[in-house]
Image (tube, rainbow, N blue to C red; front, side, top):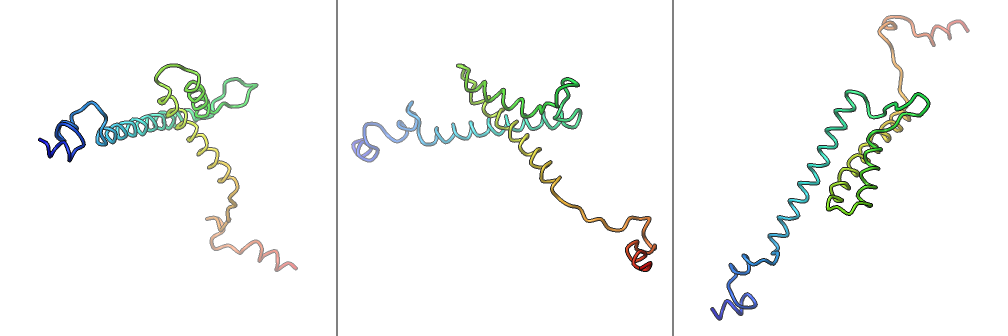
Length: 143
């Protein structure tokens, strides 16, 4: 027993230290894995719900004919993030996860719209033009 005291820094064996109420490295690691799984799950649920809404109605909805369309994903994100800062309940980390996921989806959509609009497209022959003379060549013949 004396050798265990020296080896493990005090009374008791390593098994006693493992079973103690103090968080060990293994317990903290399990805690981190649980928090990570919860965060990924919450993000996936938000993404699935917004994806389903996008397919059914789109993520920019008309509230009134006089107002511009409201982005649902950004609205959910901002409400959840503000609520995470002002509430005293122990759910603020869940609200932050929801808000971050929703705001990220909004940023992804808008970046895709802007970058997609910035791309130029190259127009080639259409099916109607196959076998016909090129209009530029025909115009050049008239010169």
